[in-house]
Amino acid sequence: MLPHRKQTKSSQKREFAMASSNSAVAQPENEQKAAAAKPKRQPRYNVILWDDPEHTYDYVITMMRELFFMTETAGRKLAEEVDKTGRAICLTTTLEHAELKRDQIKAYGRDPNSMRSKGSMSASIEPAP
Image (cartoon, rainbow, N blue to C red; front, side, top):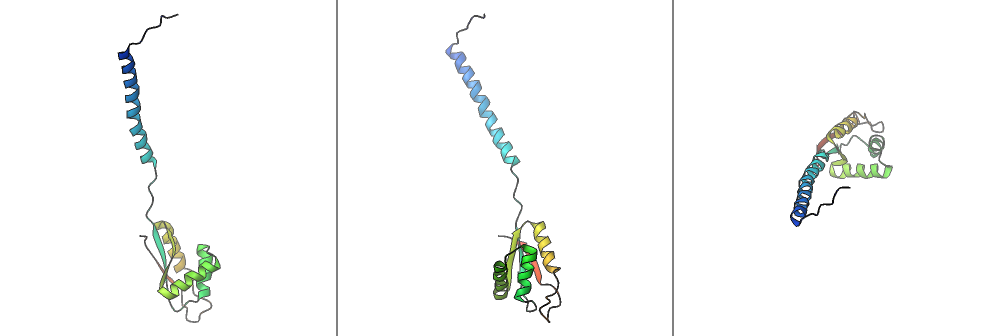
């Protein structure tokens, strides 16, 4: 068996200082790694539906149900907002998804219930505030 060495106060202080300095240096590195690993949020964009006199409420409600999976009630509220204000935000999402939804609105086709309808409704995207 090895003889037990008595630790002096100065050797105890050195060991404590070494242990303290190791943990103090390691913590900021861990925090930096955690901050760097956190994904950045992509900018958000609004999909805007624009009003026109050629399309019916039923057309807007059906389009919102098929393209945005809205309920009939939500689709009706959106149709009323478009009619009253001239535009309505259908969705707020990433740029790529907003572009897809805008293009789907533009490609949706004419309103079969309106004799004046010659094509799809207008839509655009804009950065969300």
